Image (cartoon, rainbow, N blue to C red; front, side, top):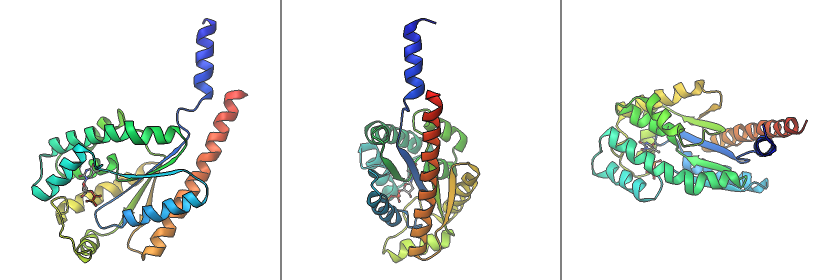
Length: 229
Ligand code: TYD
């Protein structure tokens, strides 16, 4: 091994590629994710973190095509998966990765776990969906699943004065919920009971995130320590 190789190896081992913290918040429609994410962002900013909040599908061209399809009649599951991959790739390249590299906390209102649940419910193999996404999309440090019964989610959508869109048929949402619950086996996944009143859901989300952030800091310190020892 020549001196150049040594230098490159040392640099790789001691420089984390990403210093930020990626949180994906998932759950069926009507779980209240968006409101709670805004409140979480305020708490994290008050603690001094740079926080970037974003959502999928994005408002880019591919995301727009997907949202339009929810109103106008659905595409095939394969076509949705293809558009979601294009949308997500752009999101990762232009927003998610740069923010993580700056050290920000990135909070996503839906991520590729929604593809596994929704396009999985529409007939695609969720392991294939996961593999296609993890080929380019960073795995979150924390996956929060907002859980509530489908009936309750649909009631909340109706109370907002909205009509359920094509993604929101009861049987589809039942399959999505089951799929999200199965993800709780992942070591980085945590469940939040979204049937509670909004204040309690909010504090459950904040305490989950703060305890995982604290653990992550320990890990980062240990990793840096061992690189120099
Ligand atoms: P939603 O969070 O409801 O956005 P908005 O409140 O702006 O309408 O997302 C729109 C729908 O897209 C939602 O019903 C779930 C669906 N979806 C998928 O089917 N697959 C995915 O990968 C993502 C991110 C969303």
